[in-house]
Length: 207
Image (tube, rainbow, N blue to C red; front, side, top):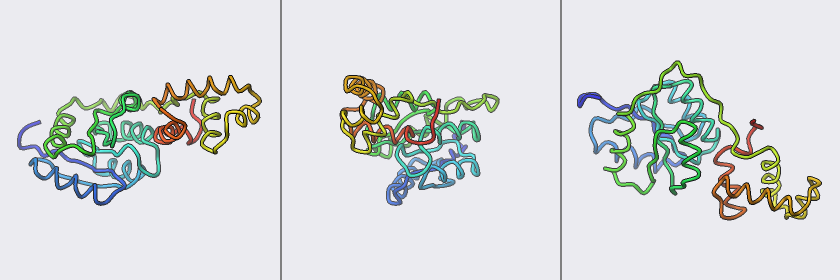
């Protein structure tokens, strides 16, 4: 990308103040222009498709469409757009899932203006994906049974109650819990539910 070419950005975050801050930080770098903003997953996709930016700065936790679905749909409908995930906490497990889905990189919400500008320029300087590549629908991280167990966990049921509801033993419930925690990189029931929601595991069933 030449020095005179402006990098076109869409910022997607559900906090107005944070979007304002990112816009101000990006303006310091020069050669970067914000062409659109969005406050939820649906808006992120619509704005990206409308403006065809070089880079989409996408908050990992927003209302609406889960982040994995947003990544897949952006890849399908605006294949030249690179996606940089904006996150509060760097999480290796979550990062692995998002990179596999098609994200180009990550930036922390605590990053400096120079780090943000560098991340945008790095993403924009990458090789754009070919539009001929068919979209890959996001696949579930968890199995069908694991999603069932986690949904009941989110409803506040104990292991014993989950076993009774699903007609399985407590030992089997505990094994499912172990697998769920490992796949999501979770440290507690609450953490597992939060991560699953971020990845859209409670949305429509997926293979």
